[in-house]
Image (cartoon, one colour):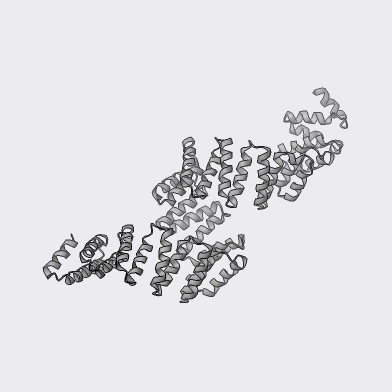
Length: 522
C-alpha cells in the first residue's frame, strides 16, 4: 500500500490511481481521496471509477452538491455503471430536480432490471403528486424484490393517499409480515384500519405496539383518538396529557386534544389547543380546517374567514374552505356572497353534495321553501346515506306543516342513525298531527327511552296519551318528567298545571289534586 501510494503520488497519470482511490475510500480516508482528486490531472482523467470514488467521498463528507457533479462526470465515461447512475439520480431527486433524476437513472441500460430504480421512480412520482404512477412503480419494485418491506410500505402508503384502503391494508400487512418488529409499520396498519372504520382491528394492532413499547407516542395518540370518537374523553385526555408532558410539541396529540375539548363543548380551550398544534405544524390543512370549525362555532367570523382564505391559498379548489366561507356568510346574512362561493366551486365539480345542501340552507334562510328542498334533494342523490340531508328536508317539510312528507324523510333519516331520539320524536309528532295516535305513541316510547330527560318530548308524549284517553299513563309520565327538571320552577309549574288539567278531566276532587301534587314533590 505505501509503495503503491508513493508511485501514484509521483505519477498522477498512472492507471493505478483508481485502485489507490478505491483503497483509500474503503479505508474511509475520504479526505485522502479528495486530496488526490483535487489535482487537475486526476480530475481530467477519462476513468469513471476515479470520479465515482471522488463523488462517493464528497458524499460521505456531506458535500452532496459536489458529489452529484462528480457522479455526472463519471457517467460521461461509463453509462453502464448502474451504481453511479443510481447515486447520481438519487442526489438529483434530493435536490428536487425530478426530470433530470428520471433521465439519469433511465440512461443506464440495465436500470429497468433493478428494483431500486422503480422505488426511486415511485418516490419521484409521490413528490410530484402523481400517485397512480407511483403505485405502478412501487408495484414493479415489489415484484423485483418481494422480500423488501420498505417497498410494500411505500406502496401501501400510496394506496392510502387515494383512498384505496383495502389495497393499502393488504400491503401494510405484507410490510409487517416481513418486518414484524417495525413498530411504525404496525402503527400505519392500525391507522389504515382506523380510516377504514375497522376499529377493533386498529385496537388490536395498537395493543401489539403497546405491549412491546408502552410509551410509543404514535400508538398512544391514535388510541386517544379512538377513545375520543367513542366519547370516552376522560380516558383520552389522560393519555394525551401524559404524552404532552413528555413531548409538549407533539402536534398530532395537541390536535386530538382539541377534539376532546370540542366534545366537551370547551370551545375556547379547543381553539387554544389547535392553535398550538398549528404553531408546531403550520402547514397542516387538517389543523387549519379544524380551527375554522372551532372559530365558526364561537362566532369568531373574522378569524374563521381568514383561516378559510389561508386554505384557499394553499389549494384554490379546496371544497371545505368554500363551504365554510358560505356558512360564515349565511350566519352574517351575506347571502349573495355565500352563493357566489358555492357557485364558484360547482364550476369545478358539479357533484359536491355539501355545496347543494349549503345552497338549500341559504334558500331556507330566505323563506324559499321549495328551492331549499329541491337543492337538498340534489345533495341526497349525490350522497344517499347522509342522514343530515334527510333531516334537513324533513325539518323543512315539518316547519311548513307538510307532515306527511316530513314523516317520510324522518323515517329515512332514522335508518342511518338508530340511536338518535330526535328522529323518533319527530316521526311521533308527525303521526300525532296526522291523527295516527297509536303509531305516534310507539315512536314516542322509543324516543323517551333514548332521551328520558327531554322536557318537550315528555310534554308532547303526554298530550298524545291524552288524545287516546290514556290519562293514568300520562300522569306517570309527568311524575317521571318532574324528576328531571330539578329546581326549574317554570317547567315544574307546567308539569303541575298539566297534571291538574288531567285530574280535572278525571273529575277528581281538590283533595285528590293536592295529594297528587304532594306525591310529585317527594
